[in-house]
Length: 49
Image 1 (cartoon, rainbow, N blue to C red):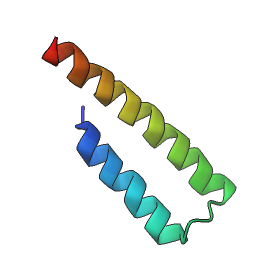
Image 2 (image 1 turned 135 degrees about the vertical axis):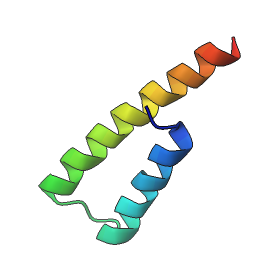
Image 3 (image 1 turned 45 degrees about the vertical axis):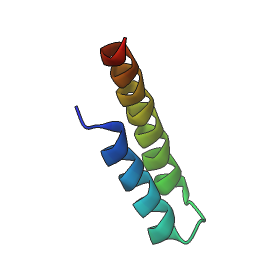
């Protein structure tokens, strides 16, 4: 599992690469990345608790 920071950087790279306009394919990739990022954030919160 990647860290939230790693996934966040990939999300940022996607936005830079697309110039802020997501195609249907880019949108699908973005949605998967957001789900992965959220899971990583939940994992970080559980470890902190």
